[in-house]
Length: 101
Image (cartoon, rainbow, N blue to C red; front, side, top):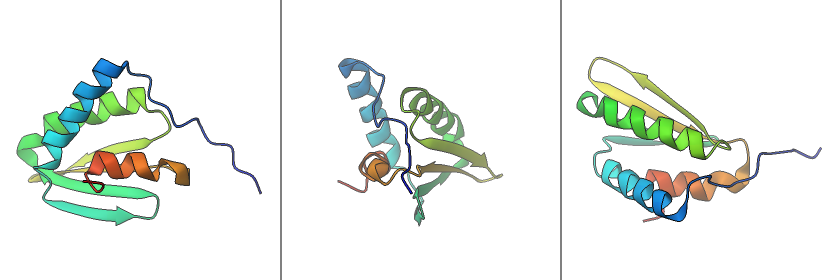
């Protein structure tokens, strides 16, 4: 059975993509827990970063529609899940999660 996936492509310009990657790098330094998921990764941050995490997640979901990006809050944390059914997206997911550094 052949799967049809969305193209793995970012819609940002080179300059905007560079800024967004810096935002990801800054956020990675605040990860409390990283968990591997079947098709991606989940990262947990302190609740004080909720707005920053949600903002970056929304921006990434807009430019990289091949990813599924979800956030969920608790009283003391925010969880960010980045997944994709397309196995070719794993490199992008790892980069956003800081796993390739």
